[in-house]
Image (cartoon, rainbow, N blue to C red; front, side, top):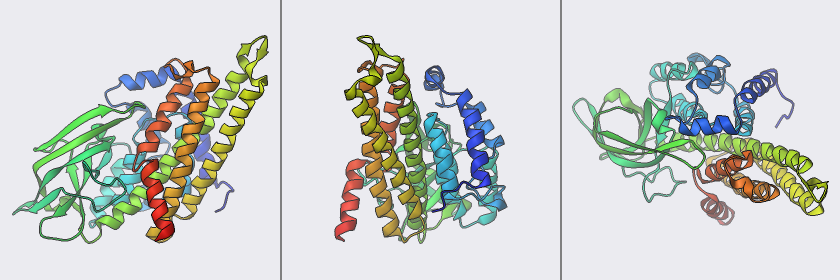
Length: 375
């Protein structure tokens, strides 16, 4: 990997520092939790104006054709400010799936709408009782009809689905092998969306489809290629989410360092106490290890699927454990009451907990990494 920042990366970080610094903090995060969507649509429009939504999309669709490194750098900045916008679900995950769609012209049109902020898309793939790391654990059925398809099934915890106008739904075409991907309007007849907030203030939904009628062009990727497309898209989403976790940890350390210098006990700043210094040192080391493993996952993003999956799981393990250590120690530095809503560190604690659970938790990634070692 080349660690020297390119011109576009420097501009990205400068714009992120300016915009996100002006709209973050405890009061801002509280307001977002009470927003029906969980984020500020005005700020989403600013993301579009700054080119962030176009970053990984192809030039043919009005995108910037940015690399996964570009996406990771931007998401580190988003993680530092605890941004709750559906960037990963719409731009990274859905954008990567649309790049592989069977109809490139239609896909470019959709990605163009994403780049301008006019369209948000969420993936509905995970199903009740299914392995969260499996791309073929799909029971939802697509039945061919005279006009196209009819989808029936259930999906679990589709991240950012409540604010999405379109859903990408995985299903098995009746009588055919493989997993296909369909583009489904979120207001389609027969589709029920049960929305709810997550612990960090972001939104998700459980989806139920009952004979949802779709035209033939709703088929984005046929059963012959759906699993591979899903695997690569989820990998990229995982890298972006890990980048947000690294950014959140780095911000948490800064908050705790400031608090340790300001908070006094027995006439001295608590940062002068050896016990607090040891805690902060552990947080610092864990965060740097997490960033190194993020780089490891990025460096292996173009490797064959099995190697890419092993690298991702290894990174998810280290970053997940580091996130727990940093956020819990951050609360301890604040004397335990850092867990209350008035302290910024509590918001980072909840965000890091949520990120660790998405697309497979620590336990499942540990199992997959172990399997890769003894395969």
